[in-house]
Length: 395
Image 1 (cartoon, rainbow, N blue to C red):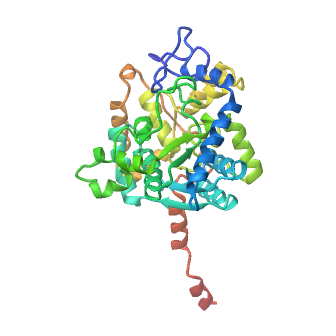
Image 2: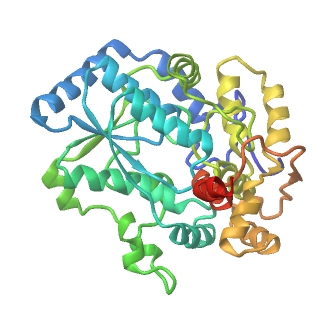
Image 3: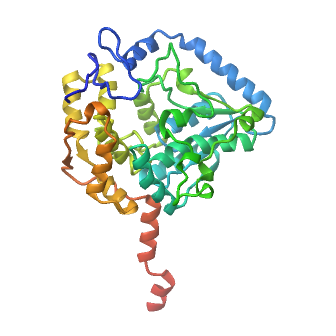
């Protein structure tokens, strides 16, 4: 795409947030993947064992850690590692975006069952989600502020209120993100981690005439004092054990029955399988930065020798440009129309893309999984179903 520089080794573009290129034009993510192969993972696992040992010795009869969980491929694998490998007792904590797919709903319940997890879930009201989805696209250029913020805030709220100091996340930001490498971490996990990485704005900054402080209170982060008093800190397992999400996904699928599904805007069926709006999130990234989910996944596959760079760009052209069905649902819940949506997204383009025409095209076929929250599907199904007592009386 014109005005974009691409990594000379993979398919990562210069418009990816935080990415840099070395003197040979190789991106941070490729450099990080090389660093990963030279890390002493045995030593890192010993560091992990020490962290978990301390957490277990200090937890008494309580939970050893908080496990933020969606039922997606990473958190499912995290649950396996913690409970089956290291004999840790976590409290599973879910921030629900209220956009669960049928497959995602199954995967989450399956995870809770097979690993016998105690579980706390917070689900924001449907109307609040819809309001936030409309505002989100105006302020950060994607539909998902409530998820970015909630995934960060809710586990921290639980950790501070229940006084469980350790939070255990999954993939390291050094894995495929491109913003930092294993050898030189820049983004520390702290209270503001998810604000810096994805949400961009705090709950307090989202307040307006339609969204009150009371509405947004569930998305507020605990204070620095609350976090310090409880000693809350977080780790990513991917910084301590060798992370291979594709092999891990195959393994949890074959071992525990975790399910993939058809995902919009890409050629793989496992990333964000729990969310019907994943395609919408990736499409907005494409419209403002010139790349979508297929770009990120082809970059990994090219890096790992599974695709040639040319094959990667062919897949990018096929998938990144597709208009997702999720856009129809988004327009329905926000009251926006097509023209308003594209006008807003055009205003969010990076400055180097202002004069670039970002090509889009209609999908060739309908998505296999219905793009509607599974909870809404269940409610509609039962509202249409006649009361079995009435059917019995008719007989």
